[in-house]
Length: 143
Image (cartoon, rainbow, N blue to C red; front, side, top):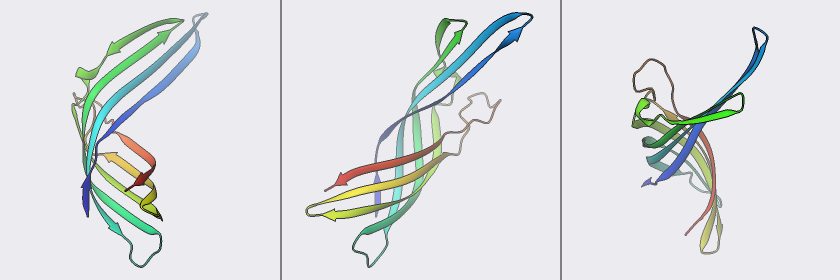
């Protein structure tokens, strides 16, 4: 059974460096956050003959960059920059996962674990190899 879904994913990194340079103490912290609209198209297979519905799934995904900000704090002074134009606007990837659905009357309680790995570099200029890698735990109820 194939299905599609939409997900808004926020990702990024944080880095902090401090030290002493020529007798002057310094602290530099960077935080980058990006938001993507992710659309996976997955094929799900339910394992047969089970009271509990175990499943595995896989498929391609495409992510569209919605926003990207870089926040830099240096010795107490903070600045924020929009870096969306420095990143690729599209992220192609692949998704693999497994889940379980426990029947509870008219609904199923569900739990899934999935790994989404980007196949295209996010650096628009191609000067570095940076990829999205997302591990997700999902819980919910299906009708």
